[in-house]
Length: 106
Image 1: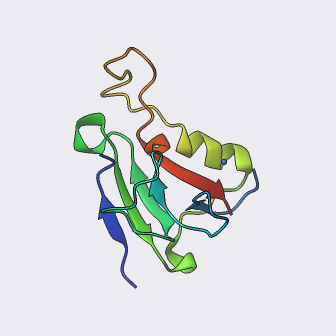
Image 2: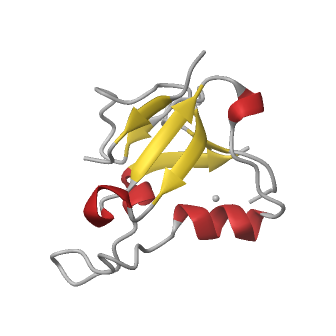
Image 3: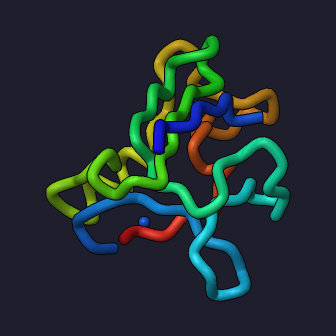
């Protein structure tokens, strides 16, 4: 299956995969919505500075296409990355576009 792209509207080494509250592995926005996101997908690529600092993600259902990280710390750093071109949100807090998604480290 080909990756899914989305403009955004952590533990062990390995993959970042999103998770919902039901115990099944899925991707959703942090507020629980799943409209327009690739449910059950792995993170394939992430550019925090894309879309003028709002971040651009690519998701895949194929684990072989998923981003991998050497450590849980590296996965956490990716998840919490702050774009240099828009480091702060309008409320003055750090801008971390990927944290709009609920994820688990796989």
